[in-house]
Length: 334
Image (tube, rainbow, N blue to C red):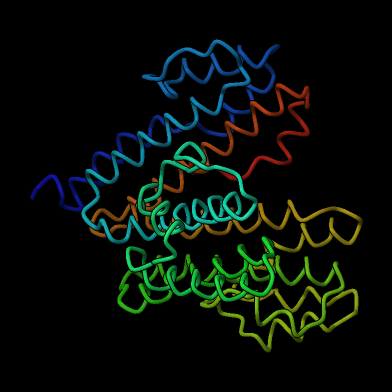
């Protein structure tokens, strides 16, 4: 059992963290002449060392997938708390289900290639569940959501319902798991995740002119802000309405994105603020060798690294300059 103890797992993760890409490396790669040379620089730093060489820079996603899949496999084999790790990977299961449901509703044949490889639920289980509309193989919140969608689709097959219904189910499943979670950083992480996600929902619906009553059907459960808080912010038409979200330490992360939005900017800054805030939470436990914080922090670090490499390669292939790319680059773990 030593290989499954927190100190042992943490010591291995500590060694692996030294190979994480930092902002300086990403920005240096962004000054490369070509996308191929940018990827070569990352490979020289040890990124995706065991992956095959690319024939075409446009196939960079295979490199990113290789590296992240290897990290997830490592954590599944070494993290003492497999249930907690599965909880952080749960969103991939819901993402996969959304994808397959939408393809099925559109009459498009789907396969395992349409799924992210990081989830816990297999393609066969999803395929059979969708085919026979029998959901006993799936987690209860997920199955309940699918039964709800079946009833709605019997009246009108609207693909836009899939996202909100499954997102709510995801929040319910996470909150059920949180009832027995003793790690305060994990509880803080998911509360903040739901808060920031709901803030973005409020802003999007407000910009689209939806009535405030629509919020109760789309807001996720489990955040610090309740439905009343969100409806009040939604109905406030003043320029300072966003200040209602300046609680729980969020102002430091949200103020600049909100100012840019008022000047005509989009939602990308708010999404970046959410992810930077979440990373800050997990960094609090990066040196704790006796909890699962180190393992989940490493997972999120690898996910953030993958997002940075994707941004780099897309920017290089589309001739977006390093300076502009840098404004979009989210905080990295190292």
